[in-house]
Length: 145
Image 1 (cartoon, rainbow, N blue to C red):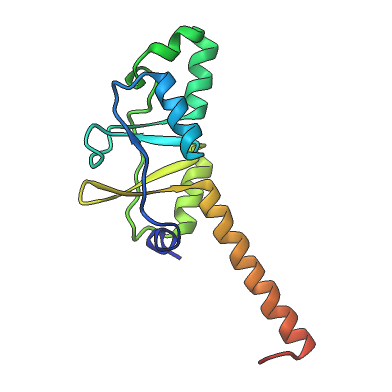
Image 2: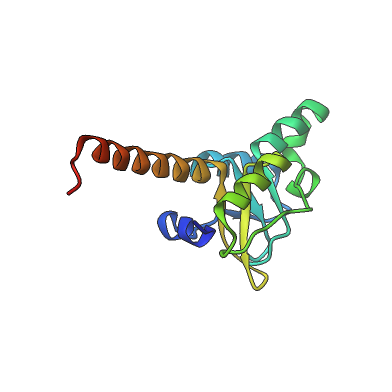
């Protein structure tokens, strides 16, 4: 399965935030959208960074509550790994596991077109396993309709 197949199911909607937004604003956005990360972008098209709940927690632990008034540019990850829609889901899962991140922006010709989360990867794998289990059970019981 490819990343484009995941985006067809979940859609290409992406929450973006500007780099000058205060960290406190990010916290509100993450809660409002019930997500764990947002892409940092001035125009909603070019990926300038990514910032997650984990980034906020680490910054709070290092610098205390004053970090909430700092701009996102102070805590964002700027070396963002992106993938294309044609990337194989298995390769992206491996990348996420090895690099220990949970969200990957999907980019086409330099333009943001979606985000895939580890939750999307796990959901897809569970669906695949359920289909396999059901097919095997039908085969074993002779119910091959």
